[in-house]
Length: 319
Image (cartoon, one colour):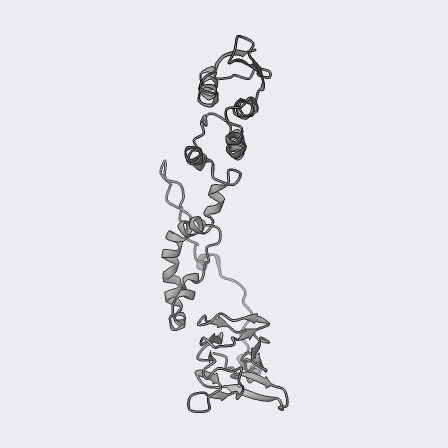
């Protein structure tokens, strides 16, 4: 196993000479208090009494902010409190006015002694090949077992989009000590894979409330909430258009404009309404479908009867 030199921190601060701190112990404690509370004392008001810890027991080295008052920056990015982060070579750690530049452990190159050249008597004879009777016969290849009907060859299921593969993101909600053992990160992936999609739905539920982004299976739920009639045989885009115009439809409900807009959105036909042609308080609805378009007359009558003024009568023509 190749040997390595311990990592280092290059410490620089205003009005101080740069110095090097060797990371040659399992944990380096950094804070404002002197030893024995901290291994590296940084005396300044912006540094908390116990500010950060750097774990040096194995590679990669890790850093965790212990809930400091003024925070810690790594490469000009705030480090969340109590969240373990891996350090990479060249990372800049800012603690108050102090800057610590991390140098990762370096492998020590081992120079292996060269083997002495064999003497002429020890030089092996050149290989001339095996005789035919001595050449071993290669075993025949093993055929894979046949896959039965209805039983496709198995393969690993694709993870859902956003699912990590190495360690669970739920570790950020646990005390940082649980991040030390990689097993727990892999173990939590089981539950994150099971409940992650539900968590994503809850986090982005606003998309379900928008007719333009809601799943097609959820459109009927929105229609029930809004009291609209949607035919499941309609194309999804037509149902989305009706839901998207629900506010305007309710604003003009009971009027000529509102009924025309509702019928046009629901049937995708040209709609004309003539008032008082068959007597007072009456109107005539004319639908002009295009081409071979089929119009459900029963559905159209239901829409008219549920949205017209109660004291009016109507007649329907579909040309």
